[in-house]
Length: 202
Image (cartoon, rainbow, N blue to C red; front, side, top):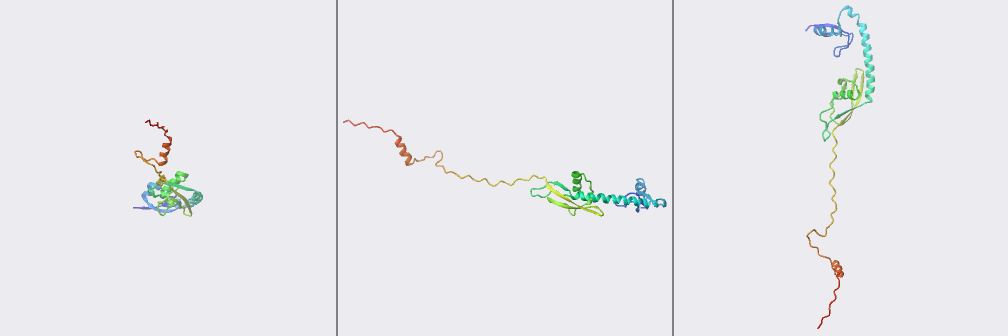
């Protein structure tokens, strides 16, 4: 594939910045870079524009540095809350990735941050608070607190066995014959009216 040299007039991620002289596929330059005014051919006339392009690049990079420095200070004060589903044992269903955090930053604080700038060595797979490293700029680093919370309702522990009430002894059950006590018999006898006996006639 034929290559050609071009001078970039705009910053293109993965390719270079303003004033950089790079080699690209001829078709890429002809069909995309030149029509979009992202680059110009390497000619004597275009080389004279390099100083202006270098100044433009310096201004852009200074602006990016200042913006990212301010952003790092702002993010350091925030707590990004990520709500996830968990099992009864507290384990996450899935994991929290840099993409998840980027989405929550946009949703909660309206901050658009490329997920590639969020540096997670491993996806988060537990509930708790974590400090995540940010690579906002070549010269600007930062941190962000991420709190992972569960949306699964907490199940109350099973109540302890109901305490048994003390049983009261019953004197007898229905249908049982209960013998009267001596005191009851005596009281009953005293209540009976006395019957006078008639004298016997001879």
